[in-house]
Image (cartoon, rainbow, N blue to C red; front, top):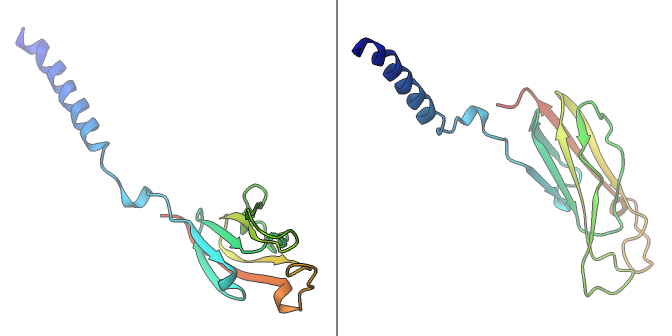
Length: 142
């Protein structure tokens, strides 16, 4: 009779060992952090890994994100979100526009946004009306 119980006991031990090791976190499979960019990174460069997300927050509701220069490298996730700030005088453009991207393949792409108004019927000069961020995507996510 003990010979029948041994395989069953061994199976239970293997199941318990498998469950116990399932609770550990493997750094290689942990999600990559979201990279944040704002108006301060205008004209700058950011490097991402494939699978990583980029969140760009521009501080004026007048910004309009343009199509990414290389959609095979960097893809817009959903539509940009306009978040007006309450208590602001109409026409000032108070608030933010937020766009989220995901790095799809190794390469380089430009994120651009434009605006024609810099607040209360004030037109933007060349530099104030354009936002550019160069994104380089490297290798696979770890």
